[in-house]
Amino acid sequence: MASSRSAACRFGRLAADAIADHLDGGPHPGPILRRAYPSHALKRAARWGFDHLPVARALEAGLLGRTVFRRLAETVFFHRSRV
Image 1: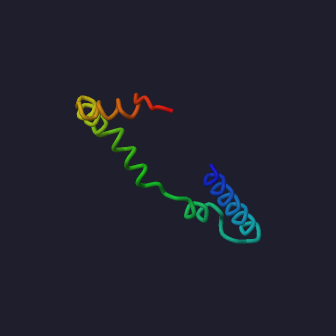
Image 2 (image 1 turned 90 degrees about the vertical axis):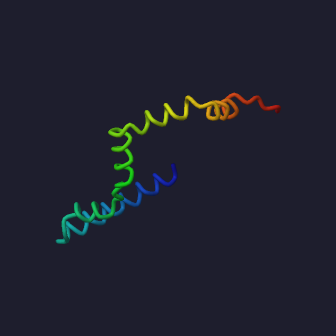
Image 3 (image 1 turned 120 degrees about the horizontal axis):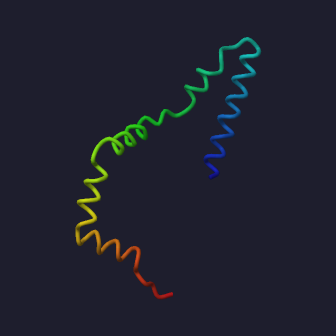
């Protein structure tokens, strides 16, 4: 949460500086802020692939039906530890 807060503060400060510069006769703050924000192109591509390609269904059919994956899941989620 601290990293998102620091990013919010950083972009807020950048926006404030860009607006102040614009009021003093500088360029419009829109393009400045757009260049500063991350594009998240890889995230968008992954989301599109997950939404439009049958990858999730193939993974579910291939992994959930296998004994090895089931045993691993049982060990991880239903293991009784001695405390």
